[in-house]
Length: 278
Image (cartoon, rainbow, N blue to C red; front, side, top):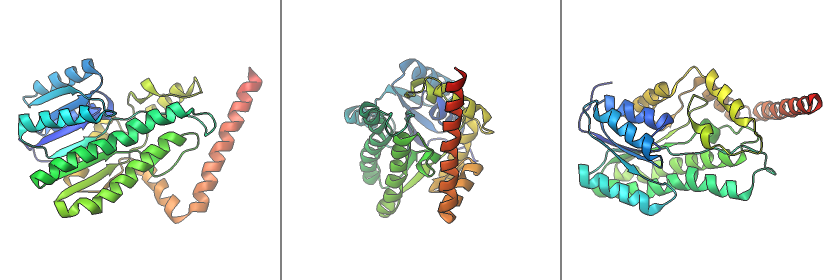
């Protein structure tokens, strides 16, 4: 892609994982980068790496659960750069567990961050984009927003909500010259498991093993996202194998649900063997 200096991108959850990879990729393309995260040490370190590239960047402590925090960040961006070209609502967490295993507190926690955090970002930056007459909103969902693995109830719900929100805004905001993209990646190595909540004490190691099997790294996903946004694509699905499963779900729902039910049976068999062995 051509090097573009002067353009401005803002990214939530940009201190680590995909958010950091996106921040660095955009910076290497010459974009100014506004970094938002609740981890001050990682956020400041990411800022320094970008500044060393000769690109303007600044970090702010932003909690997407707090509207005032996002508004303060937006105001700082406008004061520093006069406006914004792309907002990437990326911050997110994970919860694992069956429908009768996940406590309401975990549901409220993940909805407040994964779904309402994106809603707040969309509300605040849509107002800015309408005033300036252009902009691009990029919402990072997950392949879990399109295909729904068992025992990921709350996570699936939040990511499906982000997909639905993005779908709605795509048509709603076109008249204002505001573009929308939704990113639905599969498994790839990140630090998502650091704060994952689950009744299963071994789930983090299981998820990390799935991450390690991915052919794509965070840097690869960031590049695909950047190119997809530049091309103006709505759905950005970095993992072709998961995209194929989504296609199967749409053309053959019966086979899709058979595969999901088979997955549940396999997990139950594994747990029973593990209990018997202990």
